Amino acid sequence: MDDSAKLGILFPLFRGLDEKDLLRVSTAMRYRSIQKGDVVFHDMDHRSAVCLVFAGQLMLRRMSASGREIGYARFLSGSHVGEVAALDGLPRLGDVVALAHSEVGVIPGRAFATLADQVRPLAGTLLMHLCGRVRDLSARIYDQVALTVPLRVEAEILRLAVDAGIEANAALIVPPPTHAQLAALVGGQREAVTRAIGGLVRDDLVATRCGGLAVRDVRALADRVRLAG
Image (cartoon, rainbow, N blue to C red):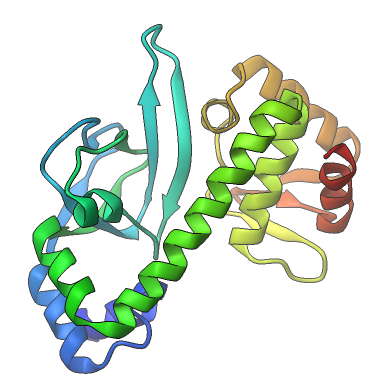
């Protein structure tokens, strides 16, 4: 399978593009191998590029003045990050760091903006994706204000379960987020996250299985989050 065909299959962003446009994307992209802990993009960097995750996992984060890590989202195989800075030309708002060894494709920001301007199916898909990002960030803001840390953990695991895919009221999140990663994503301390996970295990809602975090009853978890707010 050539690189352009792989783009159309692996990345929802490029589905609907014809062979000619997929080839344009592939030609603009350069592959990189990223080691765990490496920073792919730096906070406030003026150089824009879009990163496509072929394998591994990345996280968008910022560090507070006190050194606290604040996470916004994880990016797994088939996802992308960096399109906002590529489109508006402003500095990045956060580091993108590798949580595991990752294989990525990097498209320069100017080239990506040109593709988005000239390839109508890409522009439409990108617009819907950005709408989804706005909704997700709005939900996270609400969580931070209205929910306790244990409930924020439950809400985040529910989001990850939906992203992983639900089958027969269950989901397997692979790779599983570490407690430190969850703490960064929900704005809590790792110890509080560990206690929250322990409570979910005791309630038989989640379990560690097959190298992933198994959500055993998605509906019950969703009901808990919904009733909390």
